[in-house]
Length: 381
Image 1: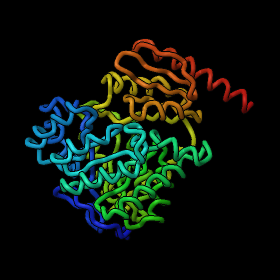
Image 2: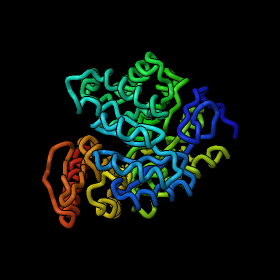
Image 3: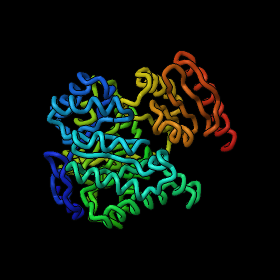
């Protein structure tokens, strides 16, 4: 099925180019600890073998950055580095990678006295000097408080669009155009709205599509499919990632799922009749190197199995495995589980319930879920 894609400009990422009618590239992210060089190289190579055009790796510490030269020497993957709070790490990683992803919502954490514009100019200069592309990665779970304060508390779309467009305008103004943008949320409907509105404003900027914290397969694949069908079917999107909660050994399934979705859209095999506006919604973050306890993946599966009896109730349960998006996503959920190294931090509609061991949390979750269901039933009776 021929699709007229938006006329985005080309952006080279190592050996591939996205945008400007180039094939839509499928991405994934290593879930290994970056300092474990052998494991990270093995997973990067597995992802490339599965068809990943770009492989992302998290760098949070100087020791993570120190591992990059050895990783680079042992893989032909087009490497993208995910920076969070410490934007200054860019100068240490840029010589060894093809792309740097920064989050506008995290720039304020480091060197708070310095304007965000100066930090972006620094990142663009580093990227230009080392032949790297940039991704402006805006995420609903980690927005800049200065942007959210400008809008109604229930409006998460407007601050995300403002953040993305102002960063694009600054990068353009300094002559750095080798960048793409992502606008991600765990709600497929918001992902569609965000990217359609951004593409209408900036049809020239390549878009990286994804439903963040999509969760466990098959539901996580279906959520992502719905968003991708509506966006790619409208010509929007130049690279994609299917973010799934998976054990490390199955990480390449993200790539396979992305390839299948693209093939189905091209063949006209779409399923966009699915409506996620009703029923229980379980979101969980993709397994990555920031997961503090790999038992988080098993817990997410146990939560899904335990809560099947509540499938017809319009509630959201978030099971998050890392410190980056965990706080924001669990605050927004009806019931939120933010998984630490040994304890699970449990919230009910943003309020702290307590911290529980991994072997204690499920009964407490069921109790709170039953309470919410009972309250929902009383309101509608």
